[in-house]
Image (cartoon, rainbow over all chains, first blue to last red; front, top):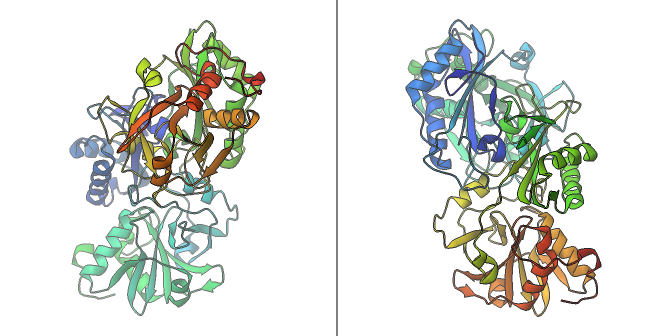
Length: 289
Length: 289
């Protein structure tokens, strides 16, 4: 069983002239694999399609992508599937040939070992000094220009710290290095707006969609330290971890609360969360726990 | 004769797990090759060393890099040498192993065919709508996160337009997609400051150093449309083109002027400029033309 497919062929090497390497000219998405199936497939494909449009990358064939994903994931109980699309090999210079075929890379990786306490007791996190630059043209896209996240993640080496929050250059709190952020206040959800920077995560969108069908208000706006101070619950999410309650960041502490637990129960089965009761996501619209 | 060396070995393929591809986690520099020799070598090495430090990339062995550059460039009358350094292959996730070896890629490419009129008559350029995001942590570094330049260069397809200027998100004019910008006003040089975004080009630094030893004032500050309107001469530079006088951008027009010509004469021999009289740069400190 290959662990990587490059344009449909098993392999581990790409052309050094690929614009993904030369300029970070591409994007990616990371999916949880459970019981041989990539989770939230349609949502990931939808975001990839939208991001390809914004970067003017060649459209991809979703059924071909699915066939390749299935070839990698069949028989895999739990794993991580990464889909990476680039503008493909090119001549020197930023100018690209819109008709040139891109490069399609699928890789299957083992499940990261997240401590079960992260889910049960919540995580301690930090606020990074590395900032997110502001650029609406790239905001929200999970593109390959990730140096800000690389530098932010290099700020700490303490295994007790599970994640770092990043501010934008104006000081707003935007997201974690690898996760999106939600605050709970009076039973409503607040999450940072991502129109100037940040990654619009598929799990973030899934949680927003769930809340909207569950009668829970979701506000997307700038988030500052005062919002952290006023929050009743705080949690992080992404497609792999599912939901991590936050118990501490700098001077603020929280207990894991009821809405976080309810959301974790609703979306956990689509992530690599351990021991999550499988709820029927589509039917969970009656507000029950 | 190989055209590429990867960690010293001829080849054209890199590991798909290389962080240069996965996250744009690396940097590059592009050098003019003349008569078998990469030009402004020490300046390029100096910038690579500084940029490696800022990104916490592993230090490189400059003599090894030079030996590899010589292996590619010997016997080449004119060419383009690109040095690309990445953090090397890594496990999934933004966190990196500071002790892991990086990847070192040198490629030799043919000379781009720039029309001789660009040098003689000046170039017509445009102002791009794609903006540069602001992030002091990455400003100045010639790193692999170049999506802004890719999107800006995709804005036009008119061969009459040689380059596009980019504004930052505040509206300041910062640089071209592949070049730095200088304005001349009353015999002094003005060039955009690069402490919030932009690439600190080696040719830009070479011109600033030349001006300082030639008694010509150089100011680095924010540049706006009003500065363009007041400029007596405008030119673009990089390590390959040398100097292109600008004759038109949007509503503004200029004739090629004396300071631009003098600078072109002083630095042309270190670039791929055609028919440039070879001046001795190091000794050109007496203000003579």
